[in-house]
Length: 138
Image 1 (cartoon, rainbow, N blue to C red):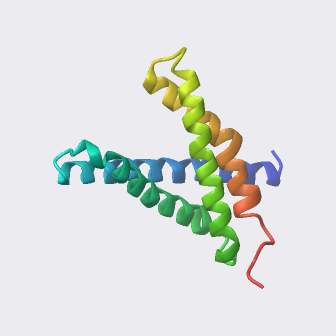
Image 2: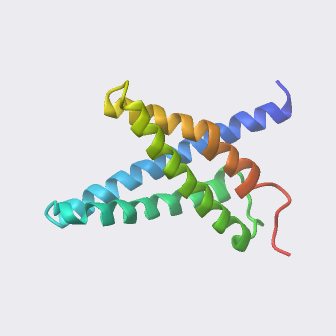
């Protein structure tokens, strides 16, 4: 296996771990907020959005400093790109999940959609656009 292939596998594995940890934190924050608010359903959307922001900050930070080691990456470049990548991934995940529930159980549809969007969009966009090498502060 070439050095480039090994690096790609390490990046993919590290990014997968970062995504898992961010998703887990997102879920914990959402559950905590729902518990603290006595499960007030009218606040669920706000809590989900707040939890997603926490998960996004964790994912961005882990990818920037641990996975891709882009200590010199420009915040003014990478943060807006990350927000666009993350928002478009959320929309794609929502659409894919909605389509997949026509054929699969909702939990399976959610998981399959999450995996497809990660492999086809989130990981490549993170590696080649948001945290692309050579894109530093000037």
